[in-house]
Image (tube, rainbow, N blue to C red; front, side, top):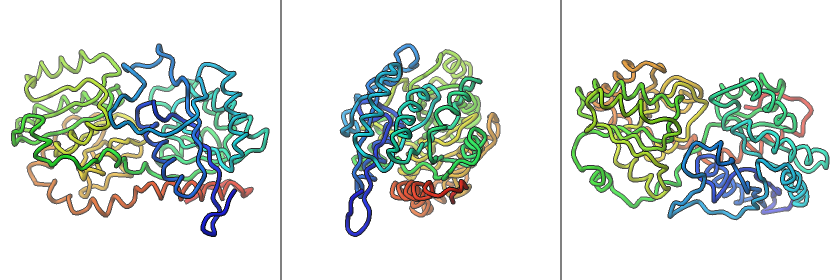
Amino acid sequence: MTEENGKHALRICLVGPAYPYRGGISHYNTSLARELTRRHDVHIVNYSRLYPAFLFPGKTQYDDSDSAMRIESARLIDSMNPFTWVRAGFHIVGFHPDAVIMQWWHPYFAPALFKVGQILRMMRRGKVIFVCHNVVPHERSVLDRILSRLAFSVAHGFLVQSEEDRDNLLRLRRGAQVVVHPLPLFDFFKRGELTRQQARERFGGDSNPIILFFGYIRPYKGLRYLLEAMPRIHERTGARLMVVGEFYEDDTPYRELVEESGLQDTVTFVDRYVGNEEVESYFMACDLVVLPYVSATQSGIVQISLSFDRPVVVTRVGGLPEVVVEGKTGFIVPPEDSRSLAGAVIRFFEEGWGEKMAPFFAEEKRRFSWSEVAASLMRLLEATGRKETRRIE
């Protein structure tokens, strides 16, 4: 621990994916590292192998964006090689950390994180904090609970991103030190290179409203409910839908649904991972972002939308209602209800809610700063030094 401007600067090790890996967890880990580096000595321990190829449903795990979020890291952890878990643990011990912050999103990584944490606890090297993006996975099994309990046993405290995840965590580890803090803004995609008109010209340039569904596609994302709602939405508003993201499942049922509805010219599929430099064009071009999720704890897509001042329609699942303010930054509808979803989207366009919501974004975005996440982690670290284990506000 060192002194900086009269305050203690900590030695902090972040354990989780970073460049060259793609995706929201990597972006979160990198952004958190950049924020913490403002005051602390930060070191990232990355994965040398994240998922084995046979377990990864997408085309590639790597970020080939022209503007990838590059950051220095030690790529030590092979998720399938226990020897590397031990090596990573002692590497972190050698860093002499005050805190080790581990990114958690799936029980597959439980054995590796448990072994690293076990070594740190044995050597008494720093507080171990888990940042939980999903306490439990979307597709669950009994084995998931066993693995999660194993990994969580080495943690001194947890940061979760929704009240639902707090409840999920406390069911797995009673009395845990928990701080709840929503996902911060994913504003690193906002490059300021395009006007709204320039962005729209890239996608046809007509005056029809554009609805955006963004992110990889899996059953829990509920895309089929939005597709079922689109005939009514298009008939009333003339809106087009862009589905932008890689399919992590068979895309045939979705495309057949579009064809059966006669919406081939209304719905556009962009079936691939979109590079960082392309994200801005889709969010600048659209009028409304829709997340028809069947289940969720939180979603980085909402935080990207907010950074571009784009209203959202979300379902009342997980932590989504905690970050969307009804009538200010979007609408909230029941899950698995195409009719309610269509009604909310039609109301948004017919009643001019885009213009009504515009003044509220600056105020709402203040809730989601990276500095606030860092502050929450510091409060959590301070609290883990106490004997009592209570929820931290």
